[in-house]
Length: 320
Ligand SMILES: Nc1ncnc2c1ncn2[C@@H]1O[C@H](COP(=O)(O)OP(=O)(O)OP(=O)(O)O)[C@@H](O)[C@H]1O
Ligand SMILES: [Mg+2]
Image (cartoon, rainbow, N blue to C red; front, top):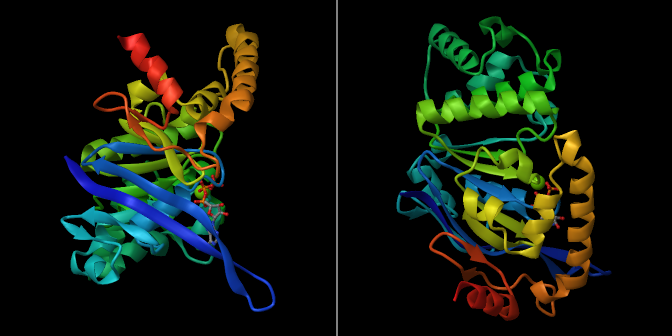
């Protein structure tokens, strides 16, 4: 069941220039995307830098006002501020950021950082709050006395876990995780992802998981969208995307996943070069004359791809 629905979301930023500082053009940061996040599931949002991922994430938590479109949660459109406060949206939906060193206030102790969202919604005694912060630290595998320290006293992976503890402090239903492990090395990434999964199972949390790396999200997401230039090029289940990628941009992102085994490294590199070559040759067919991603076309019940008609015909021919 969908817990939150994003409908035809558009976020255009004005570009101002000239002597009169007039609006001369727009950045189409997000340009008509649709998707649902299910209860207790992870939805992946994947694309390269500048594709519009964070802008979508910010709109979902209510930090960015859409140009048009709707985000429906509990039957109301939360793009309107009054609706957000009516349903305590800011308690139900939290965010984890990529860079914990700048997103956690360096002058505050961990206790205050973690308790801050709670203080906005609940009145707790000093003892109660200390107990709750201790529990939250325990959930992410950190000792209780961490609460008396400052962010700089922790490693990147530990800080990311503190960010997770803070995000879950209000018992949220949805967490927008914007590149939560991108700043960490591989072994620490796995550890943080495991904590996120464990917490998801225990508290039935949904994630909107944002990443530029299809390798990272593979074991996290049930459904996902691949995006570029503010639009989705392909959406589907994990199987659709990893086993049957149909858009040339998805294929390119998949070939960019670093190979783990030395045995296939050479072959992977050759494959990557070949895909890159095909991408350069064929790219233009996959976008319209203004460089806009084509409309999504339904391939199966779960799989939609922004294919040109010629490719769609080929696909149908192959299926027939
Ligand atoms: N406040 C803003 N004003 C104007 N343009 C913006 C603003 N915020 C983002 N943009 C532009 O919107 C586009 C999408 O940005 P966004 O931050 O969503 O990308 P992203 O996919 O999260 O990239 P990254 O992987 O680098 O974080 C970019 O071209 C960016 O320059
Ligand atoms: Mg971003």
